Each structure stands twice: as C-alpha cells, then as structure tokens.
Length: 169
Length: 393
Ligand SMILES: [Zn+2]
Image 1: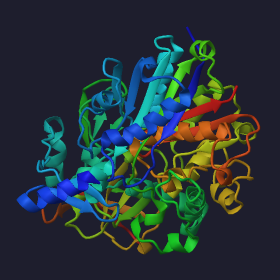
Image 2: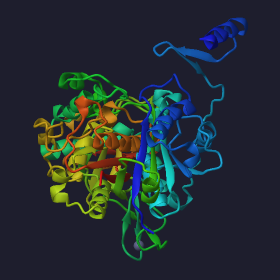
Image 3: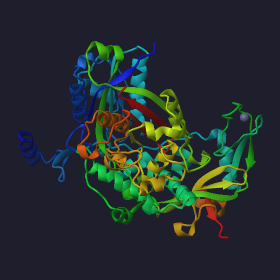
C-alpha cells in the first residue's frame, strides 16, 4: 500500500516514470525503454541456385548423387548418407493438396497482409511443398484436390516466391 | 547404478495473466509450495533445473536469476529448452541425475512469463517454432496454423466436424472451472466454442490454449534419500519415453498422427512394462498435451487410449471424463489451466502427483485403482514428445 502512494507521488512530481497500470489486475507495469529490432541475415550461398531457379520459373530441389535421396527444401548435403555431392533437379510443380489452413490471427511481421491460406501439396515426385494457396476461400478447398505450384511475386515486398494454385475438377 | 527416483514435493503458482508478480515472484509461488510439501530445505537441493523458453520475457539467464532469489546460489544448474515440452525435458534431466547416482535431490522449476511481451509478438515468436526459413519467413505460419494443418487432415479423414473438436474445450473448461489454479475457471458450451473467432481455420479461439504466465516446481529424490529421511508417499517416476520429428512440417508423411508421440509412448510403456493394448486398464488418469483441441484427439489415438479415428467418438461418449474409460486433463489441461510453455510439463507432474495421492479438488479427483498415471507433453507441433509414467509403487 505504501508502495502505491509513493509511486503516485513520484509520478505526479516528475511525470517521467514509464509506468502503466493494468486496470484489470490493478498491477503496476514498468514499460521497458529498451526496444530491439530483430532482423536476421541468413546464409543461402550453397543453395543460391534455388533462387536463380525461381527467376527461371523453375522449382528446384536437390538430389544426392550417391544415394538418390531427393530434398525439398533443397539442401547442399545429404542427411542420409552424408555426401555433399548433390545435383539440382527440377520438380514437376504438379500434385495433390494434402492439407490447408487459413491464418486469421497473424504474426506482427505478417500483419500487413490480408488473411492468407497455407497448404501442403504432395508433388508427383512424392515430395511435399508448403506454401500459400492462391484461393483464399477455404470452402473452395478440399483435401485431395489437384493443384500446381506457380512462381509468383510477393507484394508489397516484391520478391520471388512460389504459391499453390488449386485446380478444380 | 540404476536407482528409483521419486517425486517428494510439488507446487504450482496460479496460472493466468500474472502482471501482479515479476519473474522471481512467480517462481517463488511454486517453489515454496514444493519445498513445504517435501519437508526438506533449500540447502538440501544439490542441483536445480529451470525449464524455460523465455524468448518473450526479459531475463536472459533465468536459472541464475532464480538461483539468487530462491537462495540456490552455488548449486549446479542449467536452463532446459525443448519448446512446449521443456518441462518434461527438465524432469528427464533431473531424473537421469538421480537415477544414475550423480545427485540425491534435484529441483525442477518450470516457468514462463509470456505476458511480458505483447500478444502479436508472442504469436509471432511461437509461430517461428517450426522451420524458420521455409515455413515462417515466407509463409507466416502460426502455432495454431501448424495444428490447423493436422485438424484439416483429421477432419477430412474421419469426417469429424468443428463441433467435435469443441467437445475437448467443453470438457477441459469443465474441469478448469474446478481448478483454483487454472487460467480459465469458467465453463464453456459447444455454442461458445463454435461462435468464437477463427484464429487459424478450422481452429477457433476456444480451440486454443491461452498465452499464460505460470510456474510449477517438483523436487525429485533417490530411493535411498527418501527412505533415510522417512519421506512418506513419494510418487515414483517409472519411465520416461521421448522422441522428435522433423523441423519442416512438409517433411511429415501424414497429418493424422504425431509420430513423436507414438514413439515416446512406445519407449515409456516398454520401460514401465505396460502393454499399449491394455493401457487404459492400467492407467487411472492422464494429462495429455492439448495446446489445441485437435492435439488432445491426436493424443488419444497416438497414446493408444482409443483406436485410430475413434477419438471423436470417445469424446461424444464422455469416455475421458471422470467415470469414463480414462479421465484426461482433469486439471483443465493446457486449454483451460493454461500453457506457460516451460512450466507445462512440470505442471503435469504436479497435477498427477496430486491425483495419485487424492489431493486434487474433490470435483475433479479421479478414482485411483492401480496407482498409475500418464503425462504426455509435446514440444512445438510434434517436434518433441515426452511420455512419463508415474506410479505409487
Ligand atoms: Zn545421400
């Protein structure tokens, strides 16, 4: 109680304490003055061919020259046989939608987009790709429906990525 | 050396939006209870494990912060992180230390103060708990989004409806309303759940566990120590099973089951000499990882409590209420009790210890026949799984 009085007095005199009151719980909160902006720099040197592929309208995966294991997302070494002798292969971009969702409550860094649908498509090669779906109405989507991958531009950032386009039967 | 390990003291803070306490004060609530419950003193603790994910809260060295405030300075410690399974991973760490003879008394304190950050940022940080580059950076998956991918596939495979998933929320809120430590102590109806807003279709707000602050503590000790000090009614950790799954959800072969749960259960059952086919006959009560309603249904089937595709029917028939085939989440589960990430697994041990000793509130106390309980704790979206078997004998 004495604490509370002190705080109020100090606040009045200096108007400088970063304190806000949680009215619901009647609790004092110190709002930190130290804000940090986080942005990662991710190394993509060894899979840069993938991004060049997008510019050529291709969805590329890697394949182990030694044991034939296929990797999407592409990786520069084989997790199975530990070889780093990999080759780039082009994926068919055709398959079947395995599952999907629509994100309504978005992360802070995605809050500037309209609600978006995400799906997983199983390509002919037997490999899954997760991406946004062009169709935003979930009622028009069905598990098992055919779909294809298209290389698209992500706006407003204006960068190349890939998307799932459902195909109605 | 291979020794028996018993839980000799348990404690839990009140769960909820705990703006009224700081990190240490939140820990203090469960720590004091666990110490009082055990009858030992802080000086008797040889090592303490802190389960905490912590990316949303300010203390970067949580174990050290708590060491100072709980008078544990000088003892060995570490922080354990296995996403939402951090609590069980912490219990595993303490269990191995005691079992192997490296320590006699170890504290596990699970804690999370998630509301130090603003909700959209917490949504973002949990959403990153998958594969950052291929699933978050470009596609903005969220934690409910990941589980929604499982829900969609499950509903399609077994013709389940959104109403069916809501039955998990109704049950867990029913018991949460009877747990004075729960974040939500309020019952909800199917209609409430169906009318709540979508967070990630087909999952709605009431399909989801809340963003919770809380702490839970347990003290584990060796059989020698327990006998020598005349400690009564320990609850023995019979076995702990564990597994992991891929970072990218796209690498999973199906979305109807969490492989890591199946494997963790197999290990736990084998080590405890339990047969999966008759598991519901052996276990009196279970706490399973219901971060979302669909997760509880997957857990029923992955743990072998009910056959594949019959989780929905089990709910319809109230088989997981008290009096049913196997009561599940009588604490209110993550759904209603709340899910302070690092505290959750430890909190499951607290709850099951109380259940086994008939110390839960009367209206949510299971009948204890065999004296065996099961805790199932998942990290991320099946990225980690732990299954722990507790027993009175
Ligand atoms: Zn290989």
